[in-house]
Every structure is written in structure tokens, then in C-alpha cells.
Amino acid sequence: ITRGNQTCGFFTVLPDAGWGEDEPRMQTFFVVGDLLGVVMHNFDLLEQLEMRATHDGLTSVLNRQTLMDRLEAECQRTRRYELQVSVLVMDLDHFKKVNDTFGHQAGDSVLRAFTRVLTQAVRDVDIVGRAGGEEFVAILPQTGLHGASQVAERIRSGTSELRIPVGRSSIGVTVSIGVASAIGEDAQVTALIAKADAALYRAKRAGRNRALAAEAGDAP
Image (tube, rainbow, N blue to C red; front, top):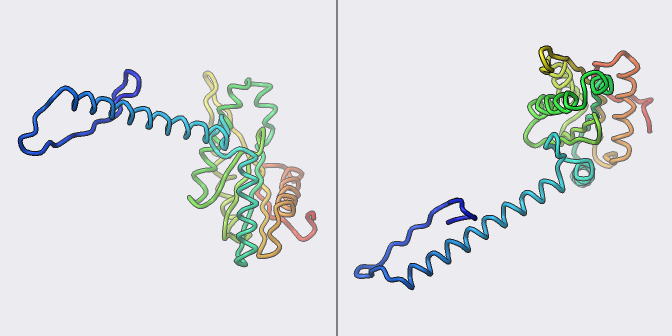
């Protein structure tokens, strides 16, 4: 089975007894192989298009629109079945300074390194994405505030241990995280994000490199 000039697979034909090779049959097999190659190529293209439409090109996590769509679906599920859901809103500290001091290529390396920490800290069922710039969001289905805060602390701790090579030296980075949770009918996208954002801003004001849970006074 070929795709252009590249062999991408094989299929085997087992003839009946007394069945010999003949040119028309062989040509048919070659045509079938070419068609299979085209089908496989088209599947690859569809996967690539879907990846580009739903994922962030730099970090390979979900992009903002897909992330918000997934959060809405998770909130609907939480309301319907009276479950819990938590959201982490994360912002890398002093990221602009990294870009200004070391350049955008170094900034991209920091974002990719942080993404690795983030994806390793969450479960397979959790959903992570890049909301824009240096801000990321994690959706934790069926997780309360205590469990989500533990995940946030793992992310914060792992990030603080990062050392990203830049030239002959390396740079460190920290992250501030806001955590919010909801149960049943209280699971609303706007409210969850607003509460997590408020907790994030408190973490920033408290000196950064912190993971704080939403409190009663946080909006809305």
C-alpha cells in the first residue's frame, strides 16, 4: 500500500488451490493498494485538520474555543447528574519579563515546559487547554475543592522546579493558580471562571507562586 513514493503498509492475497497469477488480477491488486493508500492519506489529513482546529499549535493542548466548549458540556453533565466539577485558572508569573529579557523563542520553551508539568499532574479524564498567552485552564470532572487544590499544588510545585535551558544558562518560572468548584445546579461556566479568576488575582496580590481556592467573597 503506497502513499506517493512511500510504502505505508501491505496486504496479502491467499489464492485458492490451482489459482495462478495473471496480469489482470495483479493490476487489480495494485489498484486496490493505491486506493487504500489514498484513503489512509485522507484520514491523516482529516486528523491534522481536526488537530489544528481544536488544539493550540504551540503547546498541543486544547485551544480556547474548544476548552470553553468542553467546560460547557462538563457543566451541563454536572447539573444533570448532581455531580461536582472544578476549574483551575493558571497564569505564569512575570512571563512578559521572560519574553523581553530572553526573547520569544525562550518564552515558547517556557510554555511548552509548563504544559508538560500540567499534563503530567492531571488525570487522563481531566481536560487542559491554553486560554491565551501565558494563561491555561484545567477542568477536573467529579472533583471537589479539596482534591482540585491538591492538583493545583502539584502543578505549582512542579513548575517552581523547572529549569529551562537558554543559551549557556537556564531560567526558572513560577505559576499562580486560582481554584473554583461547583456542585449540581451551581455549575455555570461564567460563575466558575469568575471565581477561579478572583482566586488567581488574590494569589498574584499575595506574592505569586501560589495556588489559592475561591472563597465566599470571590465574585460572583
